[in-house]
Image (cartoon, rainbow, N blue to C red):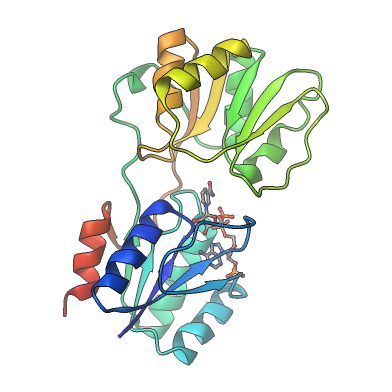
Length: 244
Ligand code: NAP
């Protein structure tokens, strides 16, 4: 049995490591968008497949028996393509997506928005000095804020062109509440813009914003494709792979 794990998340790495330890052949696939990514054990391939057709060909050529889509909750294109390719080939597919932050204490006061453009309009109503923690791709939607200070945080190895008044920090979680509070206070941040990534690694910014009375604008997750089995933990994905 060879399992393809669509990766780019801590959960994907943990799953690949656990499956390798259990003697399963695993190939983890990464997009190649980040220089020097953290790698799991087992085989790793890097780069896009070339759309649904390319992924379909890859699945057949490598005799993949199961696919776990453990990409980030906001990697909607890869998730949709995996669903189509697995439907075409009849290969079982599982979506592993960590729980979101909707039930986090404090979430009642957050401003939920459907996408980056809505996040931008909402943030403009709420403040002026923004902490933008929304991922590299979405940052481009905010670039016309060239007349204001914006703090952007992205993972190391992410290339980013931003207006001169902005500050870019390259850092990878986990972050703790005290340092997040210090960071926001030192930059006089008055609104946090983020997305519902979920998990423990980056949640501290939300607690810190609550401590400082900084409003939070949070982008809702894209919907998962209908008809695909869904789990929210590495353990459940591991059991699914090993089930007959
Ligand atoms: P996306 O918009 O859903 O995908 C764009 C294209 O990138 C896909 O069509 C595919 O190209 C390729 N791709 C994406 N994930 C891939 C993977 N695991 N293996 C091989 N090709 C992949 O994805 P994204 O939002 O740019 O995210 C890219 C990667 O970064 C994902 O693996 C994701 O898990 C990780 N990540 C994303 C975020 C985020 O906020 N979006 C945050 C942390 C990590 P082809 O169509 O050519 O196959």
